[in-house]
Image 1 (cartoon, rainbow, N blue to C red):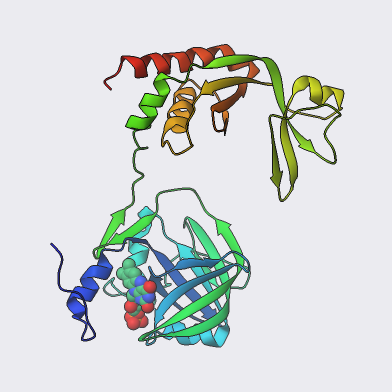
Image 2: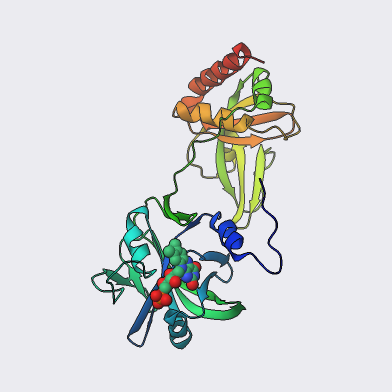
Length: 308
Ligand SMILES: Cc1cc2nc3c(=O)[nH]c(=O)nc-3n(C[C@H](O)[C@H](O)[C@H](O)COP(=O)(O)O)c2cc1C
């Protein structure tokens, strides 16, 4: 059921309800301007730009913290973990009897001196970049001076006015119907040659025919036969064998590579997949090649035995 659209006269009840359907993480924004501190819980935090590194958040105009950010030109952002709901409540002014939000809260200092809350998933320290008008809020854009990671952990979430645990979804069922059909026909073949991954500076050795060359910003890398690499004196780590799958697809099939990688991963075998028009090429550590072949043949047999 949909509700009537929000028009100019904005049913603020509906508007708030709709916005509450947007799940977010939770941060605490803190500022210390010449010894005067303020902080508030903010879920409007977002990444904005990588180059230059910018983040944004929206702060209610009435917040003292906003004035302090303007005055001090700095602020910190602490990203809360699921164990830190109390900090979320405290810095939203929702813990009764708390006058000083910082009292008893362990802090660490970012480079620019903004207080960070200890024990968070990550922190960012910003210089104020710009302030934009955002109605009853200001859009605060910060240039990131420093970013740091805390302990890995689950994030604290907020959705429909409730604190949430944001749990990871199970991976999707790997083989779509299309992929299962394709799997029946893949006929894995283990090629005789051994291959290596090499960084290429300048030309490849004369006569070398790479399976593939990747041109990257940092320079080129290639998959070459071990013979060619050794002939050209190119250093490498690890030797790989190539398993070729008949695919004959136009690369639109979803899930084949996922199904193959998943089966190999379950067998503890690393693989690098290079997809082409008529074949997929899997590069697996030479020591695991026979086991990888058996695993893929098993996968194909299962697909053939399964329902259409
Ligand atoms: C989960 C959550 C997210 C919030 N996100 C924001 C936000 O992005 N921007 C904002 O201005 N206020 C946000 N608030 C509200 C402020 O934290 C709150 O209004 C402020 O701390 C009140 O400070 P005051 O008592 O000094 O007015 C949020 C509150 C909660 C509970």
